[in-house]
Image 1 (cartoon, rainbow, N blue to C red):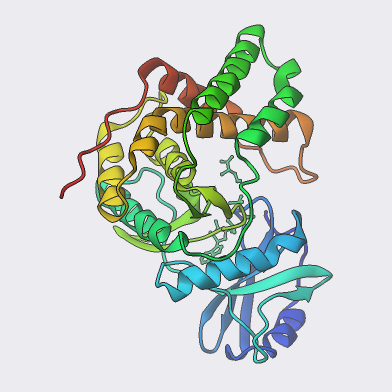
Image 2 (image 1 turned 60 degrees about the horizontal axis):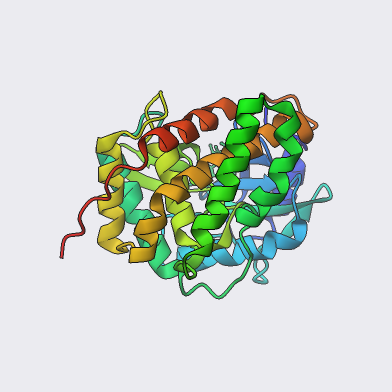
Length: 319
Ligand SMILES: Nc1ncnc2c1ncn2[C@@H]1O[C@H](COP(=O)(O)OP(=O)(O)OP(=O)(O)O)[C@@H](O)[C@H]1O
Ligand SMILES: N[C@@H](CCO)C(=O)O
């Protein structure tokens, strides 16, 4: 149950009075989610989501508000924050930072079909086109520097073969990236897994959970998406989902020559990023709550598959 800070109906009813969203009708804690307390709130006018921030750098919340509002203004399907009557989005409730959002329609796809992959590729391409001009700045906290520093913390928990695998990969990434100029930059979602999207049928109703949002290599975001959305159970790439997603993405933003060259490396680097972050949660910095952590093995499998088979060819960009 991902409600770490319970709220009463009366508290939420009083909170809503600051906003022009109608009167409180009901409140329901949201069971999924692992980081923040999330509630579905119904008023006599609309459906809302109330999020209390339980962890992380609260100083970074204004960045997330600006990013969500910027993307919402550019007609991306994201929950732009709801501002109160004085224009303020970020509030405090029960001593925790609090944000109010529209509730977006849809469900997380477990096994995305090709139309859903196409829809996600198209929207991510549009998002990256507009996010290049986003004025905010938050360096990617899970970039190669982070991998370099943090992988040392988990080595002692790994088999000798996995230690070698992880060290060799980080060396390879450093060597590959040092041979290229800076890749195209912009704002990233930073964690665009299936469970951070909402679909109604084949229609993408929303992209949520921007709390890994940052600025950096756009290719990093795309590689995270491909590893989660287009991997088979054995970690190999699923050619149909891969092609549907990347064709749609590249119709909006064709990859540059440097990005095409670094693509197989970026797929491996983002696989290792999740292998490592999940290992850190299991061994080094377990959360206070008892929710089951995500399985690190999944991303070791994906990494090994990328090493064994490389990336599939990128689809041709139609002129
Ligand atoms: N704007 C929204 N519209 C509809 N549903 C939402 C919205 N925001 C959050 N949710 C629902 O609440 C759940 C938890 O939200 P969120 O992913 O932001 O929480 P979290 O604790 O950061 O979780 P995670 O483990 O994914 O990091 C989502 O899986 C989704 O079902
Ligand atoms: N999407 C992340 C968890 C949330 O950051 C993972 O699958 O490890």
